[in-house]
Amino acid sequence: MTEMERTDMQTLAERPPAIADKDVPSAFAFEHIHKTFRSKDGGTVTALQDVCFSVGKGEFVTVVGPSGCGKSTLLRILAGLERASSGRALLGGRIVNGPTREVGVVFQAPVLLPWRTVLQNVLVPAEIQGRDRSASLARAHHYLQLVGLENFATKYPNELSGGMQQRVGIARALVNDPLLLLMDEPFGALDAMTRETMNLELQKIRERTGATIMLVTHSIPEAVFLGDRVVVMSPRPGRVTQVVDVNLPGLRTLDLINTDRFGTYVSSIRANLNASGGLD
Amino acid sequence: MAAIEGGAAIQAESLPDGSGLTPTRRLVLVASVFVGVVLLWHLLVTLMEVSPLIFPAPASVMKSLYQGIVSGEILKHGSVTLYEILVGFAIGALLGLLLGAAIGQSALLEAVLYPYVVAFQAMPKVAIAPLFVLWFGFGVTSKIIITAAIVFFPVLANTIVGLRSAPRDQVDLMTAFTASQWHIFRMVRVPHALPFIFVGLDIGIVLAVIGAIVGEFVGAQAGLGYLIMQRNFSMDASGVFAILIVLSIIGIVLHSVMRFVARRVIFWTDTHSDLSRGA
Image (tube, rainbow over all chains, first blue to last red):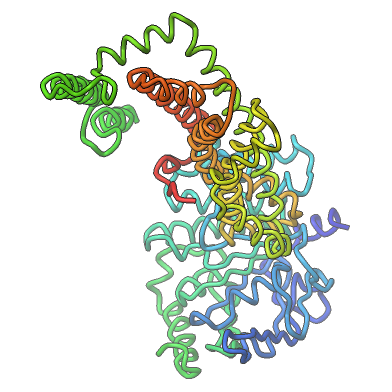
């Protein structure tokens, strides 16, 4: 099953990213997701309200919205870390009930284990899932090379810069060849220049792996730069207010940021967020 | 690369502990203070003609220490006390670790057991010591139990706090990779707890010396605490001072061994020596 999906996905990756289609099974989908939290004073807070969208295999979707719009909660529901109050999340057609082996996750903080070397950190998910040691090792080296850290395999995390640590986190998320990569503001803690480099590298990673990616960010330019589609969310209660198809070249360079087309996307999304009161 | 390493080496040489002293200079200063204090002690005692029964001169303490060593008396009683310290520490630490691991993993166990643990800790062990001697006799057993009871709590408290110190993000990430509770415990919680546990063990080993001595004060047939009492009764102040020196040395050696082990086990952090020593 998993093997079939893999080959299926790799052939898809060579084609231009598919926009979700009713006939093609989606990589993942949200169907009428509601999420309410109990607040400390006993009331309830609606974090997500009727969120619906689906994403095709190999697609790179970015979710943008102001802080507190529930975009991270959405990601956590898909990762199986939280349950929706109602509605359902689907992953490869199956309802998400908890964490699954097909998903790789990257958070804002790299959260590496400081007593493990870079290589040992990358191997953590493989160890957890009891995967074949030598095959995992080969994949770990492969992904460390992909994120440009093959020479740092035996270093410890505290010997690495913040950007390098986050790249280790990305290699770790990829080590089991996940079908879906979930990234929750992965570059939010990095300085602007490192962030740009990481955005370029992430495109390279995406191109090489063909994985479906959902990246949550509060930076509109980052969302437009990375996404095939941008899902725009309103402030609490979080709703999807706009889904923008980004028709920009497949492999993007930093020059793109200064073009009019790029600027048009950014200002249209900003206007939308303004209208929903997201940018006070 | 070499330049960076060189820089780090220079820094390590000149700023080992924030005092701005090189290790050699520090050693010289510490030694000078020691010599100064001993000299002052000697001068004060002789000039003021303090009775050696009350406050002996350093020379007579040294003489007493020397005699204790060559006669084998210190070795004989010291080995009894050291045995009580080590066995009591091992038992107390093991119980603290096991119960700490259980409580650290289960909120239910904490709710049920922790009040009793705190109540037990609130009871001064010195006050219970006579009972232990009554129950377990004048031999080493009662001292081992008193020592274990004193060591138990700091190890327990630090184990609980340590097991809960793992960042939530870290645990979530492991969960997202389909880790079981056991994976998370073994791969994340235990290593995160180690710096705390070593603080507990370090406090425990120093308290273990106190536990054994207190036990011997209450009633014993051998041990350094017993020897202190005996010498005190015979007004041998310099003999008592000599034992105090031996006890300090035992404490320092045990503490240093603990620090040495801690540095090797929890190599990834250099803050463990500065962690709070409360508990």
